[in-house]
Amino acid sequence: MTNTKKYIQQLLVLKEINISPKNEQAFQEFVSKEENISKVKLIQELQKQMAKDWELINRKLDIQNQQILFPNGTVGKEYLAPLDFDLLDLSDLNSISIDGLEIFGLAYNPDKKNISGTPLESGNLKFNLFYKINEDDTNEFYQKTLSIIFNPDPKSLWKSIPSNTEDIYWKKDDVSELYSLEEKSVVVASKRGRSHANKGSFRDDDYAIKHFPENNWSLIAVSDGAGSAVLGRKGAEIACNAVVTFFQKYFDENTASVFDQEVLNYRENTENSLGDAKIQLLNASRFAYQQIQDAADKIEVSSKDFHATLIFTLLKKFDFGYAILTFGVGDCPIGVVSKDQTSVELMNKIDVGEFGGGTRFITMSEIFEDENFESRFSAVIVEDFSYFFLMTDGIYDPKFEVEANLKKIEKWNSFIEDLKGKNEDQLAVNFQNRNQETATQLSEWMDFWSPGNHDDRTLAIIY
Image (cartoon, rainbow, N blue to C red; front, side, top):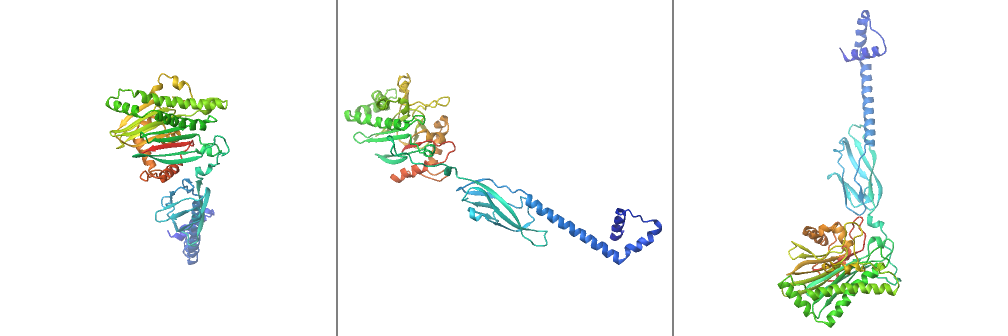
């Protein structure tokens, strides 16, 4: 059966026109006419073209309606997202170009099949995809609008309002310094947290450093004024300075020979109690408590308004190594990392409590009445060490997270690598410089971003 005859038969059936047997010969002659063959061929070609036209329209609509999703990005941070048209079942597109990415700091790489760059602004950023379709004989360009959401840099959402320099207890928002301790150096930075900077309040943390050249003992103290205490910043300052004042007077009135001899005895037998040395560190903490109490009495307020933690260390180099004596109240860790960085000595009890609110303060009289008060003193003798850290919880919380991690050397080594530049911002502290640039670098490093951790940050490193 010819194509023409079959087509005409189907047409007549649709029109409900019957072909009787007596008319079969006439029908054969009708479908055999060249004129009718041409008409059927033309009709079929038109139908085929109409179907093709509709398929193209349908394909264009599918492309326009197809979702092409990209992961969100963040302003100022390197962005990379795949854009592979084969994987998107869009292999029938050709002459592809993308317009509008450049103004956002981005670019499309057809060879690598991705969009990359560093976004310059936040929002739902729109750009245009131009393309042709293989089946389209018109060779026409089509346009599809795409978009990527870029979130603002979280840091940019925080204000930095200067604190009131006219306040009676004002102190600098950010400080950093480097000191020489004979063969070692100590670099320290104390920085107001974003939560304080955002509302123009004060830095609560504080520190003090003193080297006693007459006997080569060195003192480093760090304190975190309680955020809930209206004068916590002053309490921290008084606590650190009081420890320095105490030992300045002690070493003026006494030689260090008692300390030194007790260290020698302790080295021979760790069961020796370091009696006077321990007593003097405990007395220094009592002196800090009393100094804060006196300051509170002077202005007729409760010492609770001066709540602050306190950690400090006395350190000296001997022929056989280093003697390290420490005291601590609160949730500020003291850690000594061995020379080969294979072990860490946690030098103080961390007052974190089983639940929130467990932090203890040097302003609490019950600290000194506790039968375990002497356990706040600690001592160790090491041949050498790589790093010796004293820090407030503004560093401890984001970098160590939980107390258990303070006992893991791998956590401390990761922390050291972080300081040396293995971090998102690639900010590094060069511990080889031994100049003020090291202190500046530490201060810059302490601007690291950690969601939910926006407290003051103070870190002292002996190295």
